[in-house]
Length: 331
Image (cartoon, rainbow, N blue to C red; front, top):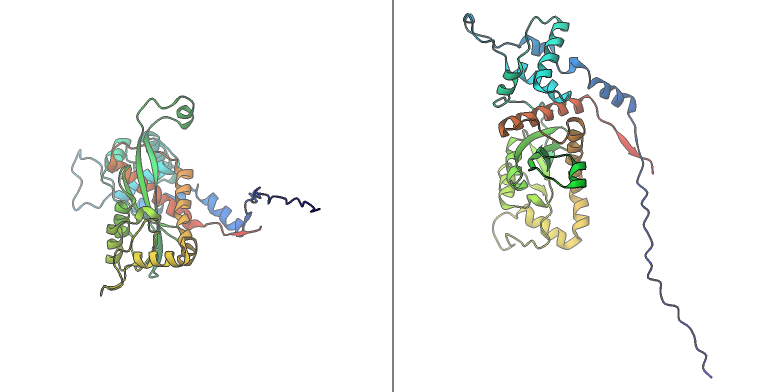
C-alpha cells in the first residue's frame, strides 16, 4: 500500500521591503546656522559699493527739471530686496527709502513705477563663482505659476479660471551648487531646446553635462559638441537606436557610446558609472528656490518675469555662497 505524501505549495507571499528612511546629520551646524542668520542681514543686500554707484556718472551737469537717473545696480538692489522679503513694488520703495535714511546715504530710492519699468530691460549678473576648473553641469526644469487658483480650492472644487505657467530651466554646478545659467520659457518649450541655450550661457569650461531623458535630442548633442563636451550623462530612450555605426570613419558619438554601454551592463549600472544621480542636485536647487521665493511669479510680461527669476537666482547664489550644510549618513 503506497503512502501518500502531501507536498506543500511554495508560498508566493512577497516580503515587504523596509521603508525606513536613512537618517542624516549636519556636520557643520554652527557655521551653517550662522549663514542662515546672515541671510536676513540688510548689509548683505545693500553694500557700500552699490551706494557709491547709486546714480550713473553724467558727462555734464544734470539739466534743470530733468528726471533723476538711477544706475542698474541701484534698481537691482531694490528688486533683490523685493524678492527676498516678498514685497510689492510700493512697499519695496518704502523699505528702500527707510533703509537709506537710517544709513545716512543721502540718496533717494527709485519709485515703484521706475522699478517696474526698468525691470523689463535690466541685465542681471547671477554672481556665480568663477574659476578655471572644468565644471560638472546638471540641467533640469520646473514650473512657476503666473495665473491660477490655490491648490486647495482646485482639489476641492476644481479650477474655474485659466491657469498659466512658465517653465524655469536651470544650469547648476554640481560642486558648488551655484546656478550658472537661467532660461525662462513658456510651458510648451522642450527641455532640449532650452538646454542648448543653457549651455551657451554657462561660463567657463564644462567637463560633463547630466540631464534626464528629455535632453536626448540631436540639437542638444550638437551644442555639447560645439562646447567641446565629451561626457554627456543623458539616458537614451528605451527604444533608442544607434545614430552612427562603428564602420563610420567619424568619431563615435557620446550618445551611441552610452547606448552601447547600457546594452552591455544595464541602465542602472551605467547611471552609477557616469555619476548620473548627481542630476538630483538641480532638483535640490529648485527646492531651495521655491521654498525661499515661492512657486509663483508676480510679473505679468515675459521680459519682466525673466528679470524676476534672474534676480531670485542671483539672491539664491549669494545665500549659498554664505554656507551650505555638510551632511553625513547615520543609518
